[in-house]
Length: 313
Length: 272
Ligand SMILES: Nc1ncnc2c1ncn2[C@@H]1O[C@H](COP(=O)(O)OP(=O)(O)O)[C@@H](O)[C@H]1O
Ligand SMILES: [Mg+2]
Ligand SMILES: [Zn+2]
Image (cartoon, rainbow over the protein chains, first blue to last red):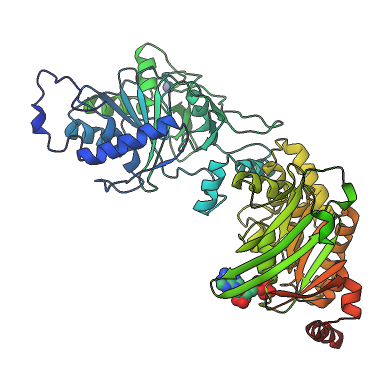
């Protein structure tokens, strides 16, 4: 997990080349690692940590970046996605950042990556034992919108008093006739701590349940780290008469034909023309490469995506 | 009155003699300022106790100590809870005390903002105590909410409106429904009609009195208004400078006040 343990790659520079490997100083990384270990020991519990100033503003993934910096080593293979896409500005610049400061290989291939940093998605390709997901979290406290007092939310977690979280689901049903909340849908971790899964779509919630990978969550501005260790129970809250449901689409992916992935609606022109495509850009590209085709396969949008991906590699 | 109850607290079978609440030598100081001083009394199930006195006499301090919101400087508060029987509420662990508060008590604040979640709808405010008790069937809770909204005479069509869209009197009705829906054993009320217009106040008091009587509810009502005390309370405690200066049946205290301070309070209401 640390740089010093990593076997040097043949062309890697000697250890002493790194004044501060992976941007953060060793003391800070140790502090963050301690927080991570505590978070793994108490699944779903929010561990406070001394969040540092990072070279990007809050809201741009400072929590995730600090987590990655604390765990990355030169033998890691790093993937970074933003809303499922590897090729957005934010994902590209964070990936370049770690390629530079941590001297690691980067990838867009989910199965190749050892560390996957993400804003708002879990890849479609199932994660494997040995992989670590790092989530960027804007608001770690699932109860904050309902209870502004920190002392009170702390007591609620300490005593597992989670009735209040159901109030938001109740409101949802009253207003929309169903639980309409789509992102950041609250979950119970190992039937003990209530946790916000960061603003991933609820489509991704079931992926966390008994997942073989380590899931780490970092909130830079709010200075909290929490975690879901491998093979932990993760339950999405619901009511007896309104069971938890994920989003589903009538369409398949217009480019690759997938019927099992999270779809984004893309507006094509100002006449209301639109298409649905996989939010996970690598998953989609991989399927197309393997010969899968959707109803709009070959659409210009697909080429643009492939070009960007090619440039980046 | 107290001597009857100096027995072990385990006996559930005593029934009628077992008090609902027993406050003993309760004192709360704020530094050098006296909040309330050496107060002892008991309440029985179904009894409505009025605490009266001028502003600053210690009513809110006493109520907050009894309701577990404010740790007393000395003295004890024993409550007969469904789960634990008659126990000193500050001997319970914090989670046990919080659970007892959720299960057995209600608290109607003077200012609805202190007692309601302003960010969620009136209906969700009313249903929340059920969710806090572990209820997880939306349809059942929705029905219970509607039943309670009609009991407090609120327009059911407005169940999903936010509290800020209701008038002060209606907010107070939402607060009352929220504090009765879970069938509490004891409800605390701090000047429940204090912030309202006189006409609104009168109608709300009638409603409150009916509910308390119908449910056989025990309640402690703090008020500086002797008319409220007369309408609501079975028994009265008169406070002055942190002390209880007079206590007795409401009618007796109001019609034949013994302490000069009580006489002053009562005569001032008679002039109105
Ligand atoms: N938080 C506090 N800090 C210091 N003094 C307080 C506090 N709350 C109340 N007091 C004082 O305690 C006394 C009783 O106040 P309170 O219980 O609010 O009376 P009431 O509800 O009858 O108006 C007053 O002298 C008041 O100034
Ligand atoms: Mg007061
Ligand atoms: Zn696709």
